[in-house]
Length: 105
Length: 105
Image 1 (cartoon, rainbow over the protein chains, first blue to last red):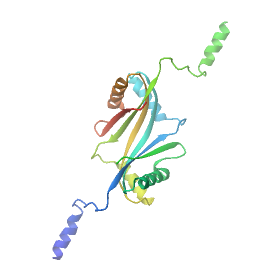
Image 2 (image 1 turned 90 degrees about the vertical axis):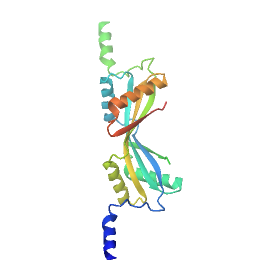
Image 3 (image 1 turned 45 degrees about the vertical axis):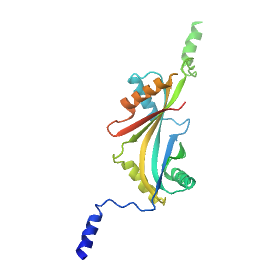
Image 4 (image 1 turned 60 degrees about the vertical axis):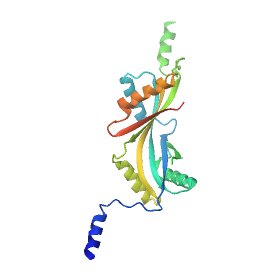
């Protein structure tokens, strides 16, 4: 009997971890863009590269980040609030960036 | 008379460049995300950081790019097609990334 236990524990690392019954994540999308007026060198570089690739009529180019998270929770407003706190604490640099939070599913 | 011309040309670099009358750009948003199954170390790092900041229930985290472009044109379909070509040629690495194009305004 002890052997089977040991074998079970040995292989438990390789078995797909059973999803916890009460874990039903919501998909949240946080979009982080540079504030208006902040110089965007990455955008400028992409703009020049597009022109050299002969794409006509390309004006201003702005580059930002999009972060999709699975957040555990059933209450949409609470999940949204938590995502905003994550954005404020970690995901966005509030000095030069703006963020928007969207609960997708 | 020659002097005024020279002065005008001298300062023309500093004068705000008049917008060409027929330049009315459309705002296009290109979202580039890693394909499913492609390891996302940046997302993993953000997930760990959020856990250390005591944000509970954070599951999978995926990070992507969002590029907002002003593209000159009045026909929505043509502008969208052009943006897809830009994404295929430059903005996305089609081996590991998917992209989606959205004409915003």
